[in-house]
Length: 444
Ligand SMILES: *[C@@H]1O[C@H](CO)[C@@H](O)[C@H](O)[C@H]1NC(C)=O
Ligand SMILES: *[C@@H]1O[C@H](CO)[C@@H](O)[C@H](O)[C@H]1NC(C)=O
Ligand SMILES: *[C@@H]1O[C@H](CO)[C@@H](O)[C@H](O)[C@H]1NC(C)=O
Ligand SMILES: *[C@@H]1O[C@H](CO)[C@@H](O)[C@H](O)[C@H]1NC(C)=O
Ligand SMILES: *[C@@H]1O[C@H](CO)[C@@H](O)[C@H](O)[C@H]1NC(C)=O
Ligand SMILES: *[C@@H]1O[C@H](CO)[C@@H](O)[C@H](O)[C@H]1NC(C)=O
Image (cartoon, rainbow, N blue to C red; front, side):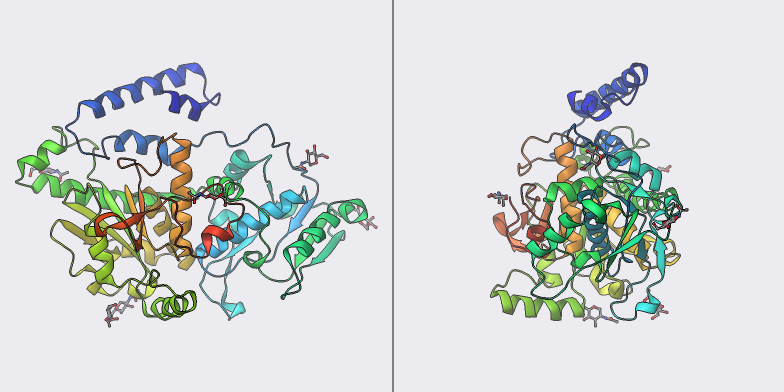
């Protein structure tokens, strides 16, 4: 109960919290009396809390951000996670200047060079604008372009580049622009490269705070819900059709209710461009812990301790593999692999441009009971960062313990008994660099 009251802390009146408290008590009691299913008993109520409620994010050290001074950042580009990091970095830069960040544009399509094909898409076409400020306001603040009063008062701040543009020079530029006559300008527009490439002056916890305030807009969140319920439905069907008494006992007597079979999400990076990239990286870093073949991934996943088959495996794969059914082959009995097509959700994805597809997949991985990814992938790293943050918010006592909810693993590193290595984000790191560009130091 303590966890929950921390969650709701002061945001609900006491009647509502009593009702919710009662509901949770019922759910907890129910979970306690369910036949044991190590590690997963608490899924149902955890999901209940997990999906749409946030704890209050602000602490007393967040004094607020001026809402009459603005920062304008260039369009965010490349992969979803490059763009999310760029967004957070732009927010934190604005915070350092004590300015409101004008809603930046993401890029809907994935191009690295053809700038004219990038298809700008406004922040609020992907994430909820008001919600962001409700959750993060005071720490960082987002503004609309219409909030700017005097469009002639724009100061350009040119970001340097190259080896001589050091962390220190970058920092002193920011300090210089946060005082005196430069600070008087209503708008500072940063000119130069994409924020993803800006110097990183902030601890991992600051990034985590910003990511927590990003809630998908309802239209996209609904699509995520339908993908997740498709996956859950398959789990239920499996139980329904099973002849195994043991399995039935493991689940619940009432089949119509929402106790789901847990699902796994595996972020498989095995497409050819990745393989070329990671072989080079392995060579450069003198390691063999970056690339894993499909066979190695399946082998590691199979050895996760305490795993009970059957289990639904959602394969989150790069676009290029969407069509390649070979990723579904070769799984051990009891593992039920699905990708978008087999799940019957490719229609959902195909409606959207790259960025939204990737955002849906990201959320599906975030909500998975178990996540397995590659510790050299930014996508995997951010998923694990957010999962770690959620565990901390839920006051999970031993993040690396055997029976935690939402464990994550890195398949590219060998852990116990040939399984993948348990993975949590080290929240004490002083910059995102340490966790987002690939590492074999993954804390557990
Ligand atoms: C921003 O400026 C306001 C008003 O001067 C001040 O109260 C607040 O503490 C500042 N916030 C930060 C994060 O420096
Ligand atoms: C906008 O700023 C410019 C330059 O400081 C000033 O000359 C002008 O009067 C301002 N316009 C308004 C509407 O405040
Ligand atoms: C389980 O099986 C029963 C009988 O075949 C069927 O009526 C019911 O709809 C099934 N439930 C699910 C969730 O598949
Ligand atoms: C999948 O393959 C079919 C036939 O080869 C092709 O028509 C379709 O465009 C492909 N879809 C994707 C997402 O690559
Ligand atoms: C599918 O993937 C496998 C393994 O990654 C590869 O060998 C094969 O060529 C791919 N097939 C197609 C049609 O892309
Ligand atoms: C986490 O990061 C801090 C700061 O870099 C470091 O001192 C600590 O040893 C790390 N912890 C683990 C478990 O790697």
